[in-house]
Length: 391
Image (cartoon, rainbow, N blue to C red; front, side, top):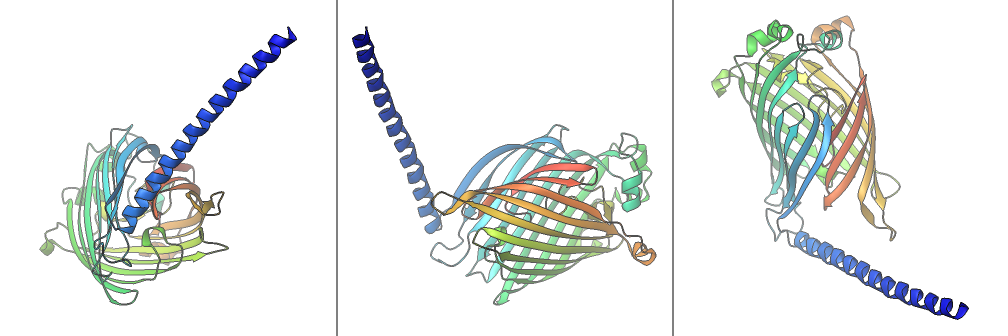
């Protein structure tokens, strides 16, 4: 009996060795296939060829509810023979939400003629059930969100190309062109009685021109690890440009990035203000709660003529077993912001909104990331699915 048991054990051992070898061969083939794919992508990047990475993922935003987003990250070189020029990028998404909202977006950042010319364009389209509390911090905090006080349906789109000329190393001057449209319908009683909504909802189209002055020494703007960015803009909206309203917008944006300990560990901070002057429609007021500032707040709940916020962010790109940078990273941020008008400054009645959060980064192309951020605000949270870094 022991003899038969011994031979049976040898038989099982032989089977395990054969299957083990088969598994090893299978794993080796998968590894080789993965490495070949990575080499092919690296070769395309080196040659400046067009790359496209499709994606799809669920998410959640306070103003949209649960959502599913599909789209692609695209990158290319405007001159394949120029080894120094950065790759241009265009992430684009289509989003559908549990509230029935449709959101389409695209953000182009392109580099031309040895980086003498930069053409950046933002495009957004939203057709969605929404909420509008009115203008000012007080209304945002005292008016309850409900079907009778804040609910309405919003159609919004914006096309915002910016042309920047580098007249000296890291110094840019440019032109801002902004076409945007905001119109509400099915307004609840609270929204319909709002003075700004009554005045501007039927004057929905705005057209503006502006001047830009920038200093930009970032290594890679969409995923900066070092450098400084200062942006000063002044844009003017007037009926003679084809729009319905007359107002002005001034922006000052300061960002700085510093690598700490090793490449892949980055400290980043941003201070930004937006000041709107004149007959400003409710859709063009300065707002907080976007995927690019205080993540976690309802986009548009806090709005007024002026906005100011600051953020501090720590970004850590993990290492592989070989010590190289992996495709995965984590981000932590903390910040605060406020909306106000000139009377709030005089009365010393400015209130600050706290914000902190954590995010995951997946590098799908060289220095091109998909990001998932979970942000916390005052009695509110948000889970965001987006591209590259928040700033």
